[in-house]
Image (cartoon, rainbow, N blue to C red; front, side, top):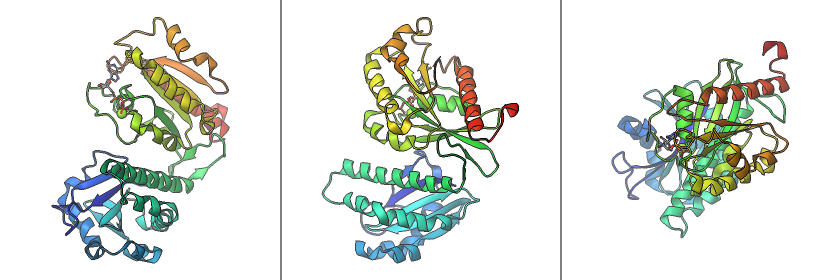
Length: 352
Ligand SMILES: Nc1nc2c(ncn2[C@@H]2O[C@H](COP(=O)(O)OP(=O)(O)OP(=O)(O)O)[C@@H](O)[C@H]2O)c(=O)[nH]1
Ligand SMILES: [Mg+2]
């Protein structure tokens, strides 16, 4: 399974070594400790030194060339596929230890050649630094999602609609798409669900999506895609929502000044054809700061929740520091997951 993907660039356009090569962009893990290890960085560079030093023109990066120069390496228990790119860049893919990175090589090169090379090259033509960084981020995001999809396709797909994947240990994987504007508490909720812990100001605002696995008592795994809520990242939401089984919208109820903005984003996603009929949990968070639970009517009216059609939906009120609402959320998710397993024929009603 592909776990992470990163781009490494030479900082000054000359010799690439671990001391002057300090810009990395990585998906999905922002705080990757991979680059703290000088040994790993050095080996990554060494594996591509010949190509990077020669600084070949772009035309040189043909399919055969990429094929011949991409290398699988294992350093410090990290399993990597390393690919040289034009302009003294190195692309790296991090896999779990059971995966053979070469299984992904052809697919990566195909994706890269087919529709990404141009967008990659565009990032270097006459555009400002912020746009370059954003383009590079988008490139990595696209590659990561497409390669994960490729990997998922080798899992067993049971049905086209409401399909649930199962992993190699036969555990069903239910994908949850977690969205809502910045500061609503999405990442904090993910941490609470997976570790039971909550601390104020534990997270910086999310810049890339994060994937959190939550294992339910029934053995079902919820694969939660926690999206960055800031405005500039919202255009990426649909990509992250691909093939979701459940939607989880998070609202900060203590910030009514942003209700209109929240409502707009909430409905923008709900109205998308791609997300049609997917069950939704509407989480009203931070009830320790403003107790909306006592009187939920204004929220239901403000967000037009009674106009939700053709999908199961449920509203839950939560406070993460007080750990309230969490068991109700888990219970609803668990019931929805069980329904999906029934539809997919993974379990029958006696099992549930
Ligand atoms: N009082 C209170 N604070 C909360 C609650 N949930 C989250 N917070 C705080 O709200 C702030 C934002 O939380 P995050 O989890 O980073 O929010 P987010 O939705 O992931 O934000 P983005 O990543 O920018 O989209 C943090 O300071 C949290 O500690 C809650 O239920 N009550
Ligand atoms: Mg976040």
